Image 1 (cartoon, rainbow, N blue to C red):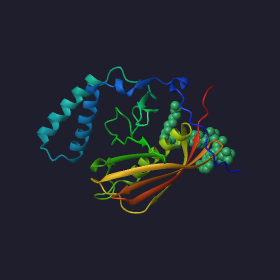
Image 2 (spheres, rainbow, N blue to C red):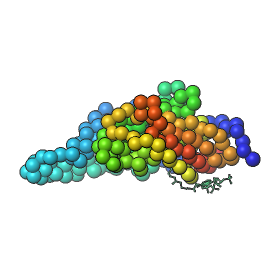
Image 3 (cartoon, helix red, strand yellow):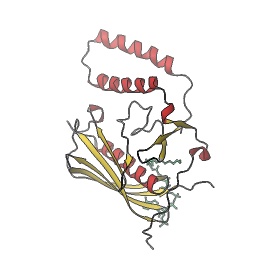
Image 4 (cartoon, protein in one colour):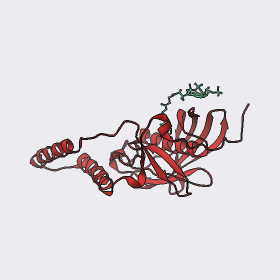
Length: 219
Ligand SMILES: CCCCCCCCCCCC(=O)SCCNC(=O)CCNC(=O)[C@H](O)C(C)(C)COP(=O)(O)OP(=O)(O)OC[C@H]1O[C@@H](n2cnc3c(N)ncnc32)[C@H](O)[C@@H]1OP(=O)(O)O
């Protein structure tokens, strides 16, 4: 039987799962600055035409910096608690590859609640390139996975993606603002049926239909 009413949202404390939690506001400005600079660095390295002396010097400098930073690593599964625009809060993994606050490889995509579900905007450069000038299909799926997961989590409770079906309708270009939305269609026991979309200039380039399965939350 299909149940069309949604379960009341539950926002579990990840500490109940044994996971440490960092308040987003407590992430030092210096770390945010470093993450942003390394993000730029990755892009520059991926595209550099510098001479070999400069490359060798840069590699030695990076090796030194890497050794200095590789101390007191975070516990795997460390979560960040973020205040959202509607006054509620969400938890996400702090190194999440799509949205992680401290992950220099993340675009990052930050999603906010809307009347329908969630919405966010991101512009991707050549780090995320698949075909020439276009976003890699796996990254399109990653953005949509993040969106459907967040929409499901905020509307019901956190879950894992059991199924993600992506329709690639148009090429998704680099260096253009991507509008990413997702909304819960219906729920059935622990299953949450969610649709996510990527739009460029109002036109849908990719659409996903997903089934999230809500995780059991300890009492
Ligand atoms: C703060 C906390 C942190 C929480 C952290 C939350 C972070 C969100 C992350 C974002 C999203 C991701 O990237 S998640 C990462 C990618 N996904 C994964 O790694 C998930 C791997 N798969 C699994 O672990 C498992 O298969 C689950 C959890 C999805 C389901 O296993 P289960 O819990 O044992 O549940 P199970 O009884 O099998 O299924 C429950 C219902 O779902 C249906 N179902 C299960 N799989 C499918 C499927 N592929 N297609 C259709 N339907 C399916 C079943 O038929 C059943 O329906 P019925 O009998 O009720 O009709």
